[in-house]
Length: 428
Image (cartoon, rainbow, N blue to C red; front, top):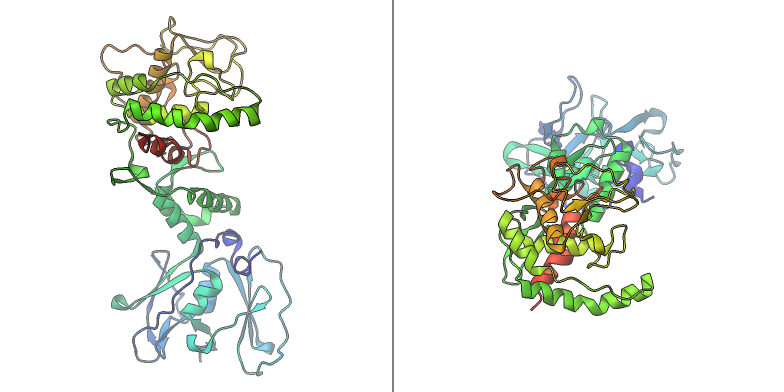
């Protein structure tokens, strides 16, 4: 385990992979001992009455070591006989402190999980105040405990961001759905309103892993005409951008690669790819749905209409509707869908649609269900047997389908946009 991970509490143990190096920030000259305010994760850090306040000395801000360490989940012990402060993080096995080799008996030593904290002289040095409190330069605290520490001169405030806060803030920026370990689905933008003390080590580990996966996709994309879009803002409803000829050209360009893939990985020939571009654009426009991105989603769901999963080509099911992982009994409810156009069959996975056009419209209707709580457009018949099972209007954006359409689906919407749709837009 990297050394920095051994210096944090149980809830911090795996969250420092993305912490950037801190920059030294000397503060303006001030009277020695002049008090400053502390803010931890955007909340005032209240120091108990009678304890040592943060203060400025020698152009450096000093922070009481015990207060900040314990606020970050570490245990702090004082060994007076050795003039030593020992910090043990919550997930660490206690390690015997090192000896005093090379250290003056009066020099204060800080040990974190068995390792001596080395503080360059230019940072300032820890010492014990007349009140018997150990204080350390703020940069030393930041680097030792993984925090980001900044001096806000206008308000004379030491602003501290813990590793947990930094993790949650970075996740919040993606505005993407996350499925929590307790089964709840939240948007990552909500994370900064959560009480971090309720988050288990396992949940934080999942958040850390999620951030690694999310970083594989940029938060914005650039279209061929130079337009820059934030992925989180790309809506399901709206006009198509790609033309039918672009969609066809994209699929034609993929065929050589797909032929090789089918041979090498599935030991079969490439299945004929139906020409659905016009259907997706026309039907999508009738519902106000971006038919070109729906087409891209169908390519993702079917592996370019090769149907390598449980749904088969003759079902005209291009988005896996009702493919729940278990074979049908044939008695599944249609939930208002037209029985002359939609059916289920024993042993078959997913719904069966009467024609490619019906299959495309069922797909568009399912997107419509997620995108809006409005009724179907006038004159339209229901073909989607899961239309009324969706939480209507719960996902107005493609990224909003994460953890809803696909589970856990952490980057499902991002993949539709970058791995499929952008390729279509680049085709001519």
